[in-house]
Image (cartoon, rainbow, N blue to C red; front, side, top):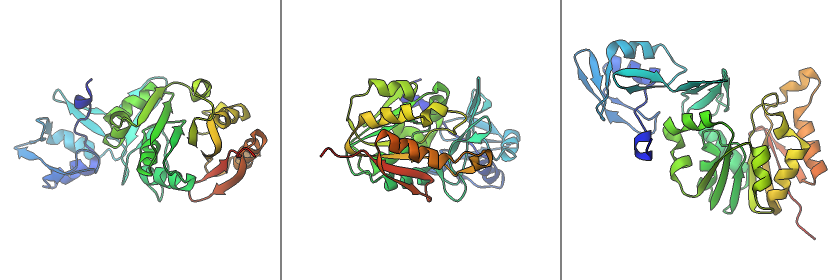
Length: 283
């Protein structure tokens, strides 16, 4: 699919209800802009020509945790079912990604895009080169550019996640901004091919520990340490230490392993549920 043809009108329960209630100015890109739609008898005509029947709108109106797009007189959910089930889910801001029913972003009291910006702010990005170890929908990479990064290398393990991102209007910069270099692969392996001391910053926002255990390992931390320049900074999302119920303090374990590798000034930031640390400068 060409880049120009990737973006398509998207419908949510909120949009469907608004049209059914008589509204004609709606957002078809998950809140980024508004357009006018035309109504003809029992159907609505979208600006690019797609036609959606009112009966389909009524079905969408009951699906608050899903996003749909029209194609060839049919409606499809923005979702992929493979070994896992991937689904785009609307929020008050940028949508989140669900994998097997687990949301990959914080959505309580913060939107995914705002959370990404807060992480970059805590990291203190001011120009330079940024490594984003887990691209996801691209919010972190785009936030880094917004804070002045000159280049972002963003690594994503799952082709399915990138296929979801291709449909998500909030992810456009991931594919269209030439300052972002997107790599498909396992970060645990990809980092071995990246040059030593190349990055000023690393953002490490991995999936939960049970899903990506080796991305929390001392061996992986050593890989991030190697690609950081002297004085470079790392942000590592840890989440809340809910695993204490199983006798594991994730945050403390992360901080200990980072320190063992050589990182200094490990500080936990509760507002973003992650730690920052630094690679020492040579003396």
